[in-house]
Image (cartoon, rainbow, N blue to C red):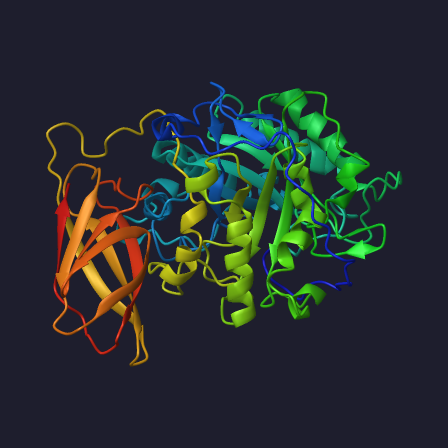
Length: 506
């Protein structure tokens, strides 16, 4: 989703609560085993995704868009080096990148634009085609321990399409290009899956039998074509807009799976994907329901949650996001995160997700990054803290950036993002100032007044009098040399200013 005017949206029927099936599992107590999970290609078993060794994994990631636009490359490279952004994603605890693209980048000689090469930024991308830049991003993400799902977002850079084909980009081109990407990354398990087409919507149908409109049949054709080239990939199949007269978000309606499941030639490769949004994208009837937000779990159950709860297949919420400006949107995001199942309680027996978006230039959602392409929206990122999950082993060349004999050191910068007198929000950025990777860190400061921490995200804290000690969360303690991690908190009362802070590498 790269925003434009969206969606003619219809009313939904009453919420349908579906109980957990017999396949429900409790959280995995062996956290060490989860930390080691993720190596190699992945496959499915019931509602879970497993790695090559059979260990369960959880996709907990971020959308980084741009390859689907006229820039022919991920956005933000006009402001930063691509490696620094991937390092920052990892430091914040995201373990997967969903990377949208259009078929334009597969045209011969397609070149990226709007990349800044000054001061050594993106130096190894100079002169490369769009696909070659994608290769570099995949390579570095794998070294950092992130996985990638490629998302066929648009047939061309001009905009999204309701169906998987257009007059200019027929189905044959769509399938040929998907196979080309599958072949390009064959043997590179950083790319674990392909999202076949973004947000099919009316007149696309599910199970209607019309080959020109039936997305379920098209997904089978394309998915089997991809698997004929690389049978190790996950095949991500989004929903449609309408099924049996019930409409919702584009790509968000998977009600048809119950009667018309997707059948792939290679077993244990299918992941169903839904999209879900808040009022900053468009209004829906459920937002004005008097019972909101208590009605939302029933809505999600009806559209896509039942697939997970009945142990049919894994469910990946490939896009969800909001500007968070509206109180309705704040309640929606809190409810959705809870519905996705906190990692501390359920481990990898949970819904998978990639938040929309990393980019700040998504018009009706904004991003995890602020407009400077550097600062983190710690409030938005903080909502996601409970559903983040451990990263995955890095690929070849992804070892300790500092090498043997390096020294560990860190600095911290404290900034107040808002202060309304009765309270305030602040952010602390921890930077690895040493020559070897940090394994963990601790930040300390002392307020001059009576300030107290009221909540903290992406770190744990203790407070004794006016002195606060914050330690990293499990997902952001490891910081590569030159990299950074951030955490945020709310406090009260306001007016405390900016105290001096110290950082200790532990």
